[in-house]
Image (cartoon, rainbow, N blue to C red; front, side):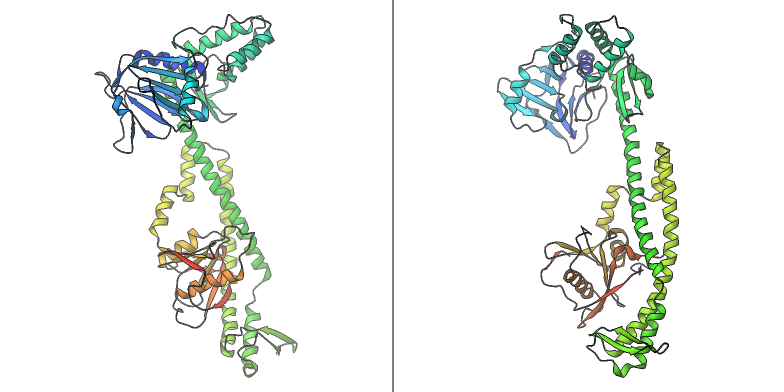
Length: 543
């Protein structure tokens, strides 16, 4: 109910005696949706009237001590200040506050998403608004149609007549400023005291809002901070409560609780989002590794193909993409695929290399599967713990354990590493590392699991990442070849006619503890033979 009409009325009734007769020396903003009015005097040289027109948390607050920031501030109406505050009033039936100064007016509108502050100088017919208005004159005309009253004036409803139902309907139509929370409390009290009529209950409740104690606390059922009269039924269900005799203290209690509560809530959501994202990533990784392990190692198969080709080397010709040769173990005819651009010896060496890589990658896949399974189980335990705690110390500890970086720190990390960026066919973004540290960053931190990763095979060179924005769409083979050509270009194979380039999905790229900067492992591999170059229809965006 912080933004309800009668609490706003109470707030300015309490503020009125503090600011009327004093001069506003400066009006400025230094943060979004908040306006600061400096009203110094001998005993309180740093006093300010603070107006928040944030749609989620709007209020007007008097602070005895507030210090203006040294930079990033914007001033308003400097040519009209200082000016003495003559009166502060509220619209009879709307959440609009009027501050009358010597020769101009300040209107504060607490209207949800349209909350704003409008300054009007009658002599010059000048209108200035805090937040932009499309039609200031129309807005001002609508404001000025209201009857403004003294906030200390009693607000009675005794003139309403008719049956209970008619009175309720008429009140809701005539006084839309009566909050839903008030009607909820009326229904509760009506059930307890059937003899009281609607008008009596409404007068009773409004009096409690304007003069009674205020309670602030957490509504755990709805995850909200409540600002209520201490007499309300809902007040009994709140936790972490504080009771105040005046609006100023109650508002401060509310703001402290609000920011603490939502800091915790935001922190918890941040950690939960990270854990759920990691669990999804690890689940996919486990499925892929399990599939890889279940297929078994092809080490012996590749070694056999290399041996058969070596024995029959005289039959192998460059340009062949396949050859049929007898299996010296079974006598059956085998079809062995060849790379047409490679020489016979290079094709033989290729199969022996694949055999060695298969042995290593298969073993690493099993080790990675076990390590990933342990991490997955650990994150499941963390998720269970998160469901049981809202304690900020626990949340900060978990965040530290998981090494979740702040957004600002991530931005600094991105700026720290150097890389080249290319755009293929005006659609596909390619990132190229410039040194070992940026190679590590691109491969391990920057790349998403369904991005493509490239590196010149067996040669020193840059790690290259092809960003895949929509994994379901698929990437054309021609684009993969262009990305591979870039990887070959930024490698020791730059001057070769053709260069083999390894490529795989980024989720199959990992780094073992203790490995040198720029060194990584891959659990799956494909190879493209390409000409090292910056392809046509490829634009370099930075360098």
